[in-house]
Amino acid sequence: AQKITQTQPGMFVQEKEAVTLDCTYDTSDPSYGLFWYKQPSSGEMIFLIYQGSYDQQNATEGRYSLNFQKARKSANLVISASQLGDSAMYFCAMREGLNNDMRFGAGTRLTVKP
Amino acid sequence: EAQVTQNPRYLITVTGKKLTVTCSQNMNHEYMSWYRQDPGLGLRQIYYSMNVEATDKGDVPEGYKVSRKEKRNFPLILESPSPNQTSLYFCASSLRWTSGQETQYFGPGTRLLVL
Image (cartoon, rainbow over all chains, first blue to last red; front, side, top):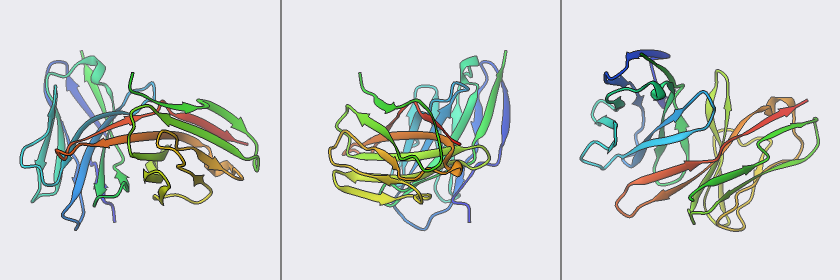
């Protein structure tokens, strides 16, 4: 069974608008971490934001925030005020337990329109 | 500057010729990982390490070896490469803060072609 699901293969957003990229996960471990990454067309992987399962508040990092809904097992990435440079692939990932075993979603390609 | 370096960045080799992809981080991170990225299959973890001399298999460890003799280095070894190991490889290191927060850094990637 898929541990991490990203249901949106592609998304479009108008420059300066906000966009939400969906991510759902599946685990029975009470301790886990959720990650979002950006991969521009140049190929590098950029870590964006992290949310621990015990964190009470949603993680935020500049224009990025993680909408963490534990009961629904969702960890959506919200990008506010989109910029043309936000056009990229975005991956959601989960680490279960305290080890370093990671699982990734299939990714969402975001295109920001001018 | 905090960074993860990988070498080589690009490599073309032939089946069966042993190779090593080096990975080094200058941040004194305990946690390091290797991933491969393939079209249609996404990112998959090959091996990870929780600290020196502590490594463990990820999702797709077959055909790979790793070692962690020093904290900063985590080389990926392909003893007998095969064409199905043609891929884009990423090394990453991470820091887990006592607050529970975590930060990760990725290397620039190594593009490997096995003929």
